[in-house]
Amino acid sequence: MKILIIDDEELLVKGIAYNLENEGYQVVTGSDGLEAIRLAQDPDVRLIVLDVMMPGMDGLEACRRIRQFSDVPIIMLTAKTEDMDKLLGFDCGADDYLTKPFNILELKARIRAILKRTSRQEAETKIIRGSITLDSQSRSTLKNGVPVELTAKEFDLVELLIRNPNRVYSRENLLDIIWGDDYRSDIRTVDVHIRRIREKLERDPANPVHILTKWGVGYYFKV
Image (cartoon, rainbow, N blue to C red):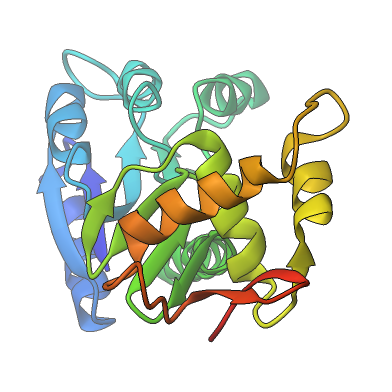
C-alpha cells in the first residue's frame, strides 16, 4: 500500500517513512501543499499523512483541494492543540488528527485502523465474478480488466443478479425492482436489456455462461 507523507520537517518525514517502510508500506514524501495535491493524484495512494503548518499552501487548503478529486483517507498533523484547529481540519475533509509531538506507534496504529476500515468498505462495494468486476460505488464495470460501458438500468440489473447468484428473478420481479412503480412497460423491456448486457459482458452472447435464462421462469447469474 502506498502512503503519502507531506511535512516540511525533513527529519520527521524521514523518521515516519523509515518506520512505515519497515512495516511493508511504500512511502512517497513531499514538503508543501502543492506537492501534496500533485502527488495525491496518483491512484495508487491509499492514505495521506498531511501537516497543517507548512510554508506556502498550508495543509488545510491542500486538504480542501484534494477532496475535490479524491476521497483517500487523510490524517492531519499539527503542533496546535486548540479544538478549533481540529474542527477546521475535519471541515476540510480530514479523517483523523494527530497533535505533535506524537508517538510513532500511535500513528502506525491509526494508519492500520483506517486502512483496515477502507479496505473492508472497498471489499463490500467491489464484486468479482469470473471475468466480470463490478464496483457499486463508482458504478463501473470491467470485463477481463477492460472497462465496459453499461447504462444505468443495465448496471442495476447486473448488480442485482451478480449479488444474488443462482437466484432466479422473473421478468415481472425485475421490472418491479429495477424500474419501479413509475415505469409502465411490458416484460420485453427486461429481455432487451438482458440481450444488451450479454452482448457487452458475455464472450459468446448466443451461448452465455454467466447471465442465464431459466426457461418459463426468468433470469439468473451463474457463479
